[in-house]
Image 1 (cartoon, rainbow, N blue to C red):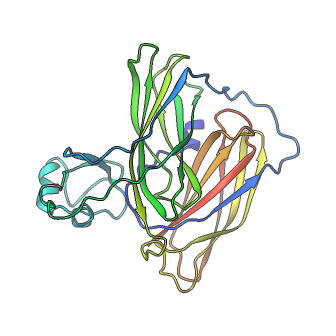
Image 2: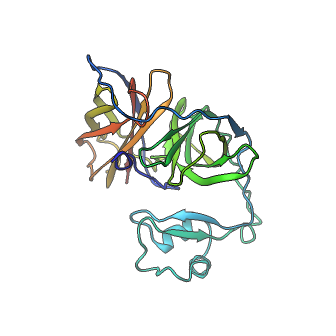
Image 3: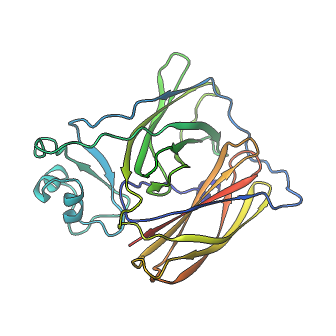
Amino acid sequence: MRKLLLIYVFLISACASHTTQRVPNTSLDPYVTSTPSLTSTVNVIVIDETALPTSTPFVYTIKANDTISKLAEQFNISQDELIAANPDVSPNSMTIGSTLLIPDSSAAQADKSTPTPVPAPVTQTVCHPSADGGLWCFALIQNNTTELLENISAQITLLDESNNVLASQTAFMPLDIVQPNSALPVYVFFDSKVRSKYTIQIQVLSANQLSLNNTRYPPAVIQNAVAQINGSIAQLSGQIFLPAESSAATQIWVAAVAYAKDGRVVGVKRWEGGALPSGGNISFSFLVSSLAAEIDAVEFFVEARP
């Protein structure tokens, strides 16, 4: 059941905007639950350098409204190249959640400068065991720039005491962008049992900088956010407003990040709403659950997709 309260989100690029609001614990009598306690790890290794682009293809997860032509334009490759790299994928019936191989465009774009990935510091890493023996792992990534960071991903690897790889996955955020002076976690679920002692290794794979003045992200804002926290569960509600001068949104996402009293991430949940016209508003209400300690505070993020 806890696995249903968290959603894998494979987000590489989309149009959106978000603000944040941190809501402290408002409950009077938190209750004790049987949620597993935090896993004690041996060590955490953070690879500071963001991985540089290579000539190898990378994996992209298909989202709603993606088309071959849009993706070819987005990644600066031809439609023929994209189709050739994915012969088993029908261009006319791509399934949301399935993956595509994106060919390297460096040869075709040799005359163009290659953007340098922006350093994205990892400020926290923690793993929590699930009731069925799996492991949820989070890495909190901070945006210390004066612009937006988008398309952030990281590789989370678990090593045993001999530095052998126990498990490794690419982790993604619940939203596409992180505002300046804000942080969002990337996260993954390892469904295989992992030893009680392990080392967590984190490497940021991608992080692109985007101007705050861009026109791709409708400036949605959360207002009247409320988090009714009762132990390991928080009922969240509020409203999302879109200024009249902005473009309309076809979809609204709200992400909630739950923190324990010691500041560690203990849960993430994303709510998905419908279309929102310019000057309009929409209400949201959903639950976020802790995988470990009781929830002390919840931070909200909103994203509007045109």
